[in-house]
Length: 497
Image (tube, rainbow, N blue to C red; front, side, top):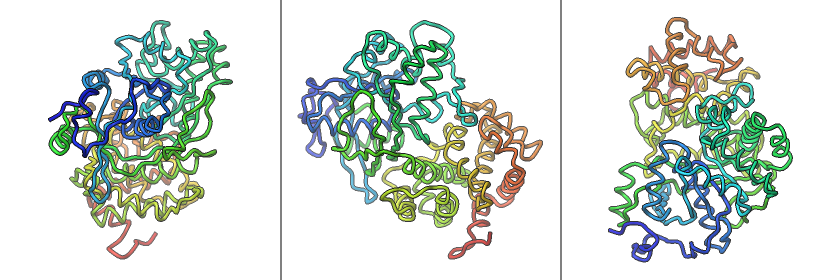
């Protein structure tokens, strides 16, 4: 058994690829906030490929700001910021590589100034983000900067050292403006439509609260490219660690396991230079929009659809529901009949084939992706992934039965969680408000849709309210399988619309 570290790379078994470049010759060119499993399976992997090609000025400094990031700090320090990435194909074949692109990891509460120094350094050209869909403090309803989280609010209220991601970004830009360095590019890698535009709204909104002059400078000089990212990456578990230890002979505190499929579509809009991402498989394009909507409304919304209904049906794993004929027919019906009509043509993509490919990816048992992973922060994910489809279909009087059933399943899931364990049983940043509307729904059917922070004016649509109440009634009377069957019909048929 070999404990992972820089000095032990030569002792790892031949089945594990290791960096062939000189890590000590690498320079940090990217600062990244939010070093979770997805970042390490995706962007950090692409950068590792760049370093292997000799592009040594683009190593990553990872930054954590949350209390939960202490564990990542300790794990990365113990193994020289190295970790094992195991990728698994739909056929079950796996490959393993030690990723060396994370040159440094800073836990911001330990030394905020050190993070600011790294942001201010002229060698830092890009600051990238995976801070979750709700991490930008931008309202789903108004599209405006409306911070709610304690760290951001604290940074807005004081002039002390930053504590939030936005606080660090704006303070870093202020330092660069003061010392005459070019503005870094802010590159969002989160699952958001127009994620670069959302990041721009957040950064400029925060900056305006601090300094109108700084905000005006940032508006002129900071680039915010949009991007679409895709790689199914479950959270690391003790089972993941044990598999890496037993199958590969590597003692790794925080390995990552993901599917083999990987895609990154990136808008070519950078203000202070960028690495040659094209050389390592990134699609660098002029317009990301068609790709990002395809992914959000098909892949991400389907995860929401399968997870609430699947959990209500007593299932645990993504691959379980995606090998179940009823669920597959329901999901394909959602994709093809409700989501695809909302999409523009996607260059080089056959959308019908893409839907089939998603089911094949979801059905891979090797990934062992838990449904529970996709019901975290549902109020952010439903609002961003599913509601745009529902709004489009309502406006056109088109089929929306599956999307409405998913909303009914979400509300029923929340009701069961609150009843079983109180509001704390719901893993969502809006959990107190969700608990309130769940109670209101029991007393006044349709009241759940009155939660304006999620639904906005959509919740006042009489058609939606009627259909939502009916879907909840069907769920209660027939269960999730009966509710789905009522839409898709018996095998080989489709229920009349």
